[in-house]
Image 1 (cartoon, rainbow, N blue to C red):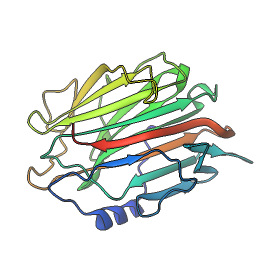
Image 2 (tube, rainbow, N blue to C red):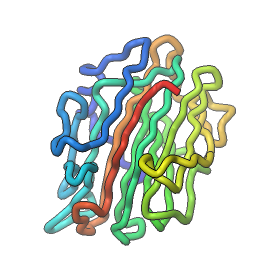
Image 3 (spheres, one colour):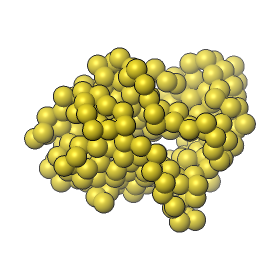
Length: 237
């Protein structure tokens, strides 16, 4: 997925969601059987698809898969602010055994400029990867990555309004097992202070972050239950 820019149609979500000074907390266990269109804006390309089954969000791709298979959902009801403390956590699972030919993950972006974005991809036992973009251009070096991993686990991102740092954590355990967070590294959208830095020029008063969850494959069939997301939570620490 690495360099994919989410289509401009997603600007619709910014209009619908707006931004308030206080964070609207969101908890989603994907247990209803159908995604709530008032909570999530859905997008898909080629054969990629998100759907709910067995209490989780499944990425699937079937029949004549392509190198462009992709699906995403964007949070509509809350865009955490640049001037407030917030954290996001979720469970990811990849038992597809497709190495880095298929993955699942999330993207955080600057609502005012979607060329400013970062993503984290989870590949199960093939590890994780991350990328950062400013004005659509990739950062020359990314330190938020690992080469080995497990088939499932948790990820947390915590933003500090004073330091303006996004701090990334991983857990070998899931929400139901009890998270055991280990710090991966930090990203600064101010241009300094993080393990990785970029200048996103976010406004102190009303700057906001958008959140998307995504899955993809590179012309590889993916059946239900192989790439999943669960227990999404956006809250105040």
